[in-house]
Amino acid sequence: MLTTRQEKILELIVREYIKTARPVGSKLLCHELKCSSATIRNEMATLEDLNYLEKTHVSSGRVPSEKGYRYYVDNLMQLNTINGEDLLKLQIIFNNNKIEINSCLKKSLEIVAEMTDCTSIVLGSKANLNRLKKVEVLPLSENSLLAIIVTDKGHVEHRNMNINNIPVEEIEKSVALINKLLIGTPIDEINQKLEFEVKPIINQYVKQYKAIYSAFYQVFNDFTMDNVSIVGKNNMLNQPEFNNVEKIKSLYNKLDNQEVLNDIYAENNDISIYIGKESKVDDDVTVIKTKYKTGNEEGTIAIIGPKRMDYERIVSMLEYIKENISDK
Image (tube, rainbow, N blue to C red; front, side):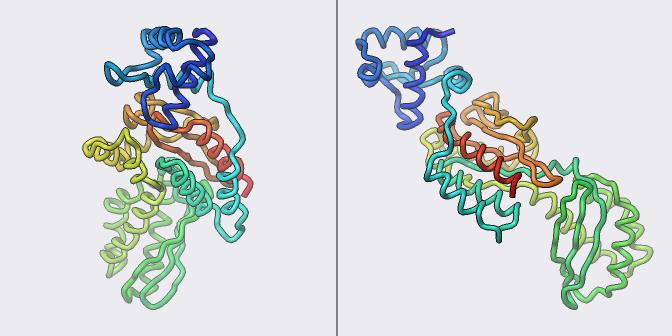
């Protein structure tokens, strides 16, 4: 365990580095701590030996290490109520009754991304946890109809389908077969079953089976893909830690990888903070995430940013969103 003075030095260095992205020297801390520069240097050297601080250059000040950030988050972080400016912007979204709940969630995360220069992610319920309950179709015009997909978790998805003069009777036959053969199937397995189990049977009863199969394949594919919303990817370009082209490309590729996104799903209802290697995304980022619940549906909201992110501010914003989305 660190001494009181060592904790104070670590806290001040973390806060200053979050604010400026520049290594922190002993002189900057003298006034705050009311002790000599030599004393502070000695304490900083001890913190470096204990792996709480790092030196970026021989003559530079110190920056927090991954271990230093973890100690700060676990022992020194002061959780405050959301600040006035952040609160006002989020209240505008949550007080607008014309915005439906999923749009409200995405818009609120857009605000967090914009205000913090981080990346926001909304992950709906895992596709393998949602099973198909039923499919319905409603005609919109001669060439289009509305497909309604309902899952066992109560999620309802509406999708426009272009049917190109396919007779309504053939569509209805196909929907009846899909409901008969696919009800209870996990959403992420629908298209595989559609290809190998449903398509050969539709072929026996429906003349334009290829066009109908393609239309429903696209509907279910869009449903699965829309379960993920990522906002503010380019914000990472504003962070000094990601001014390297190869590094930012690597991060972008990881955020496009479904396996990486699966690791981001929150395990519990707490707001959890994963720093560097803990994040399973990238050694240079922190992931702050939590579960959210709307009606029968639950998912994950997450913020990804540099390890040098404003932890208190982001946690307070996520707390506000989580509490208010469940009440909307």
